Length: 106
Image (tube, rainbow, N blue to C red; front, side, top):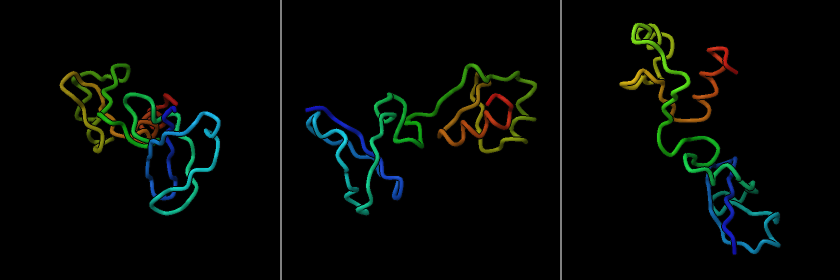
């Protein structure tokens, strides 16, 4: 039987459940709150926990900045760290998406 990941939007719980393939689309209730859970295909990605947080911080090579821009960056986005290679470090999809919108990349 395959593993399926389900996510509860109400209490932010992620569960991985063994189910027969014939039952993959049956309703799954959250064991914590009883609300219906949604199938979470994103959870199978190696760096993702549910739909909200990265398992390990994401260091973005494509958004790296120059050393001279670090002070300005910290003033504008104090909650986003810059690593030793001047790359922004994101802890969640929300933080990453917000940054992309603020900078005009999304």
